[in-house]
Amino acid sequence: MRDIQASLMREPKTSTRSAERRFFAWTAALIAIFVFVGFSRTYYFHSLFGMPDLSVFLRIHGAVMSGWVVLFFAQTALVSVDRVAAHRALGTFGAVYAALVVLLGSSATVLSARREVRAHSDFVSSFLAVLALELTQMLLFASLVGAAVWLRNRPSYHKRLMLLATLCMLPNVFVRLLLPLGVQSNIAFLSIWATLVLAIVLTDTLRNRKLHPAFGIGVTVVLASMYVAYFASRTPLWQHFAAGVVG
Image (cartoon, rainbow, N blue to C red; front, top):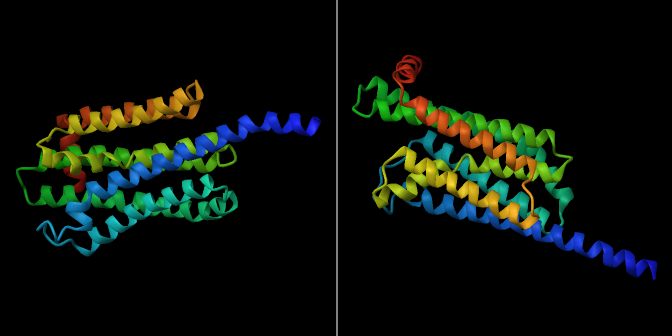
């Protein structure tokens, strides 16, 4: 009788855990779909869309960024099928890979801004604004991954921080998705991305009937940082400073 009672008591927890694992796996799949569709024209199938050929650096950059999305999906999938040991083993590689993401992500945006500054193009101001946003994205990504690694023994915190870190890479995806639709404002790209982030957090909150601290604190920091970066990027102080640094 006690064994039956114990089994009945464990069942809701097991069901809740499985549902949460599926939620994160489906969220990771959604991110992968966004990335694939967003970069199909300019990266994955750029030749089919008549886009200019990519430099070796941009090919590597795109491969590394895509690799992180694949890795994140693989990690959530492993947990969803209860392969936690494999997930943890792959996590060590993931921590090192994250450093490569930050290095190449930061380098790409700096090199793009430098090219425009040195060419004295008409788009210098726009590229310097993007520089502020993308460097902020990389800083947030690195900080969130670092916090997730530190809290790797607290799964509820770890997975939410890793999800937020990956979401910090998506503003660039929304630029590619929305530009063909005529949307050209950085504040529009940022706000649509922020809406997606909030929708994911809200869904998780409704599922659990409470806001998880990792999401509560993390989303506040992420959204506040990105909007501060946006408004700061438009100031003459940032424009002058960034032009001097990258030029």
